[in-house]
Image (tube, rainbow, N blue to C red; front, side, top):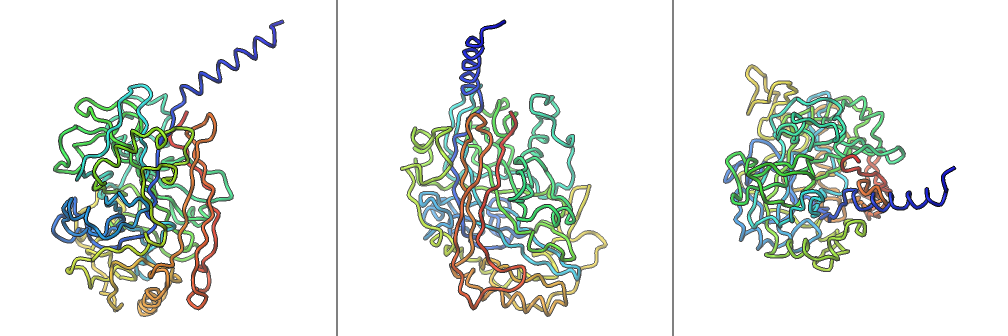
Length: 473
């Protein structure tokens, strides 16, 4: 019989080996609690003019049609926690289209979280370099309406060359996570499409988390490219792995997540769609323009106490390099909406802003009205400032006039004047399985008693417990 003590020794050595070889996660998460605004603004794709579809925007207040680096750095405020970060982040807004055709903005929980994964690849040892100033990139395509790869994703260890093309990696970089804090969590980016409303109503009691990983391999010379994506590339594992030839510089792997409160529309007749006319989710995308104070991001990457895998929760407060602001300061920071858009109605409308048509595919979406489509009548809703954060007004499937009244009441909510409900999350590596990040945080929000809505939109305190699993072991 084998000596049990020998078995114990072998087991101990094996455990130590696993601890050394499991992919570590060194990261921080910049919480952008406040929305700068909702507007057809996209200074990367449509500089100097209104963009084709509406975005929800976060970060530095000086974002506009075509901000310079100097203008961003000179912003009066940022809607994110890190004061030295005057970058801007944006993505398409999620809407709910009622049975009568009215589009209503879906509220978010906690704004947008921008993750910066800063670890070097354990195999290829590429040092991580900070984004250069004025660096710009787009992840995803607003016109995509189908998925070309196998479903579900095969395990990473079984990926073939076809799984590691840039097209395939871009598809795998996107996810929609069904949130139910009383059920086991789904893995991040496990589902690359928005599941139907029947499923969301029944299973996603706490909403849907939109997730997007950006490319992290750079050609080392171009701050942008003609299509805003070919100067960067994904490593062959989406977040980690080997960078392709011609992309020698490893940048932080950026990951967006935004929680949409789809649960507020459970049982209401209609469908979900993003502002780019996408009901599938395949066309979800994100934009980033870098404007960090000079040298700060590289200092964070190079400071051991800010970059310790297995000893950090991703909380920016754990890193002494950062200067931080409170949640209320972030939520009160707003952009100055360009004059051309100041009177554009963006909520409770009969047509998506920019006259965007809902197109479900599977063929790629077109720009502008669908040939042969009949445009719905214009809404009679009063104009609303597009920079105001949407309040969770009661869903109104009735006539447009009723929707207009609800919209008017919603703009009076204290949520748009600084006392808005926010939910934040905290993430921590879990022992050997450092690919799992658990959430455990409670945030209390103060809302005046006389302004609380009734019905399913009453504010309440949340315990945010949903977990992440970035990749598979």
